[in-house]
Image (cartoon, rainbow over all chains, first blue to last red):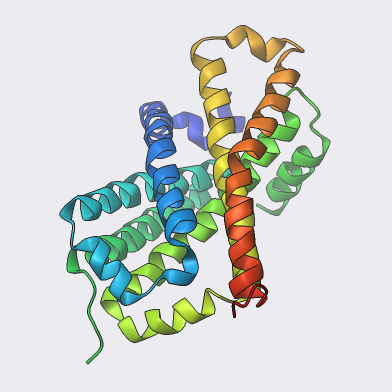
Length: 126
Length: 140
């Protein structure tokens, strides 16, 4: 091991935790994403999207909760997956840290934007 | 850094172990879905942050290139899910399959199941693409 040890292997506990998160979120995402895609893309259809439609959908609190779960699980799964791919390209500790913090802020910012929109709801233009 | 990128990419190209193809397709479909997901969250969030932008985006979503890309993304989403289930199944119940040639049949089955589950999406989104994207059947 020594100097050739991969940075990812230095943080075992963290590694196991993210692996488990990937696996469990994956199982949840199968029904969450597929139901979402069937309703939005196949039953509603992208051409029927409008502010009125989104507003009508979010009048039902259950759908907002559904969308929060979808956002939380899908985007964290995606960010960790991207991290797994990019980690293969990195050897030294410095870039590993840059990558981890970069992806952490990407995850935080996009998730926050999405969550604020879901909770805030549709604002109709004046 | 640069040599690491080079060795990883050449590793992607040269590695020919079992599951080579599905390793790559799982990553490609995952990355494609991630790019779509990020844009999807940002564009949908405009309903709160900038609703007039959302109205402009809805028109943009009817661009035939966007509609076509969505059909491809729907394949990625179905494939990534079905193949992910295969990975979890092998991992949890049949680790012996990793060493066996029969895993190849399993991968082919994943591909067929994906095509089967994807076909309604092709039919419906394909129809919408022809109608609203290209203006057939009196759409436009």
